[in-house]
Structure formats: structure tokens, C-alpha cells
Length: 82
Image (spheres, one colour):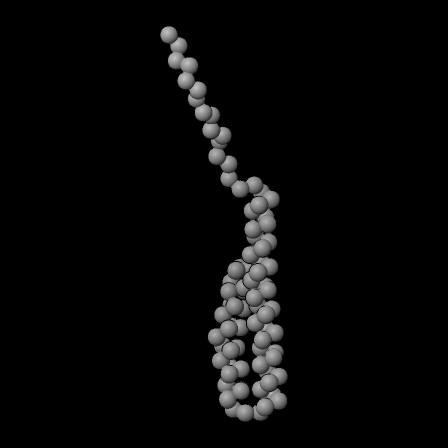
């Protein structure tokens, strides 16, 4: 006697398409550049405030922001291109 139980056919597993991979790379590149742009805008605002106030504390804040925010992001962007 033949066994007539239905069998489920599973579709083959497919990976991401080429378009999805290209979009993912594009989004990552744009997001890194957007973060770098925002940090540079922040640096210009801090530099403007430091020049207008002319206090040592405002210059120290600008230097710390540049050292700990802008330089690491710029380094990561340059390293990513290599």
C-alpha cells in the first residue's frame, strides 16, 4: 500500500541579493559620513563659542572635543577606505 501522507517542500535557502548588499554598503558609508559631518559642525560651534567667550575653559572644552570626538571618527573613516 502506498503512503499518501503529504510532504512539505521547503524552498532553498537564499542569501541576500546583490541589490541588498549594495544598499547595505551605501547606508553604512553615508551614516559614517553623516556622523563625521555632525561632529565637525559641533566643532565649529564650539570654536565659535570659544572665540567669542575667550576663556581658558572654553578652549579646553574645544580641545577635548576635538581630541576625543573628531579625531577618532576621522581616523575610522580614513582606515575604512584603505
